[in-house]
Amino acid sequence: MRTDLEVAWEIPETPPGFAGRVERFMGPGRTRAESAVEIAGLIVCALLLAAGIRASGAWHTWSGLQCAVVALVGLDLIGGVLTNATNAAKRWYHRPGPGVRRSRLLFVSAHLLHLLAVGLIVLPADWRWTLGNGALLLAGAALVEFAPLHLKRPVSMIALTAAVVVNLFWLEVPLALGWFAPLFFLKLLVCHLVPEAPLERRRSA
Image (cartoon, rainbow, N blue to C red; front, side, top):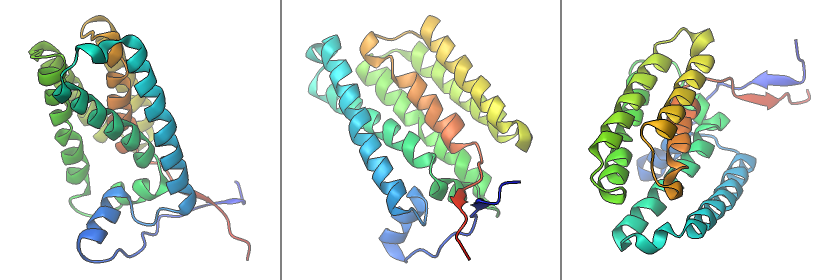
């Protein structure tokens, strides 16, 4: 048993109104260190993604709308991977109480809009890709959410790996969009749906 760590499930109070809703969406009680890591990681990864897309030359063939969709989706997925992996988000999205499971599944389902935007605007009009990934998302989310607690992490990894492999061989996209499936399923099936103990260094008495 480690004595230098403690699990901090206590959720701090949030302010009323819009500020409180934003804080609850991101996860109440984010530390400055968590925020700094998220911002730095978002900047670094977004720059790398932009450089990769630029090197592929694909952006020359995209319309302004297609570029905007790729930029917004890319930023959302990178930011979502980082945010959903924080202690603050784990505490909030896996807190006890009625309706929490429904909230998690609604959050995942809302990302079907990402598939519609990429599949129908950027690819474009690729219903096979859109519906295939929609089925992978909903099936994977159900498997993870209803798996026994001690199996959620490995089940999420199976669902993530299967989705990435299917996208590589049967739902392939141009190289410039090769990042989408790994980040999309990582954010939702692993970072968002898997409960993990919010560990902190134990404070000295």
